[in-house]
Amino acid sequence: MYAITGITGQVGGAVARSLLKAGKQVRAVVRSADKGAPWAALGCEVAVADNTDVAGMTAAFAGTEGVFVLMPPTYDPIPGYPLTIAAIAAVREALTAAKPAKAVVLSTVGGHVERENLLNNLKMTEDGLRDLPVPVAFLRANWFMENASWDLDAAKTGTIKSYLQPLDRAIGMVSTEDIGATAADLLQETWNGARVIELDGPAAGVSPNDIAGAFAKSLGHAVEVTAVPRDQWEPTFRAQGAQNPIPRIQMLDGFNEGWLVFEGGAVEQRRGATTLQQAIDRLVQAKAAA
Image (cartoon, rainbow, N blue to C red; front, top):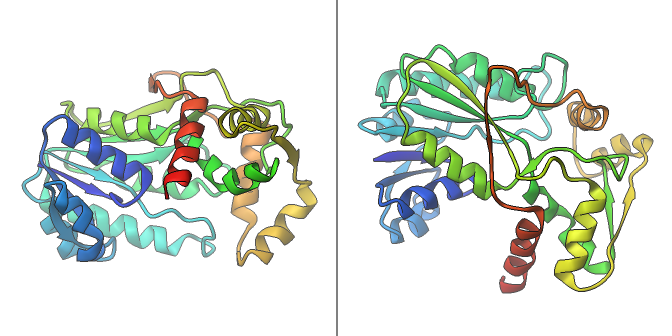
């Protein structure tokens, strides 16, 4: 039995599907029973708990061969990340009490970087869970190819906007399907202590121009991409409702300036198989089927 948090999202769902395909038993950890219903229909057990519910998480994690931990995304953090700190403490307490055989925690490219940016919350997660009394693996995934879903409607009109710049500069990207498959593989492996795995896609990098080209091929019409001037970022994010957009801006700077990258060295490296075109095609097909 494997307990999967974040199962209603792209990555958690991909982890669960990979395990089910391999014939493994899955326990879906969800915030409400109705969110677990689709997974129950696939044969999963359902446990109701969120990342503030230590008792619920402890029960959900107990007796398992492994737990996939996905901390809730933080796009507009309160300064100091108090919600992240509280969530880390609760998950740590639950894992320590439940003592599953192992834990795989989703982290991020740049999970080792000290410089301030939005991804610091996952560095904090690594630091807070590294010395768990059970084997733990931190899966540092590169920029999600599926982030392009934010641009799908605009791509249909023929123009998308990019905060990644310059437009011909490639950065590493990986599909959420490959992240899920890799996490599922890790859950079925055996090790001691803590390990870090950095996961990239099959290509050396993907640029905004590449994303526009993939949309054009999938949609069957020309798609151009324009860069959003940096001095427009903060007012744009605030107009969208952000109270603290600076960490997000720092993150984008990190990718654009090249300091949010993999640690490399002795850290384990793996690659997914999904191409950008395959990921974009899936996004377009899913939207058409919705």
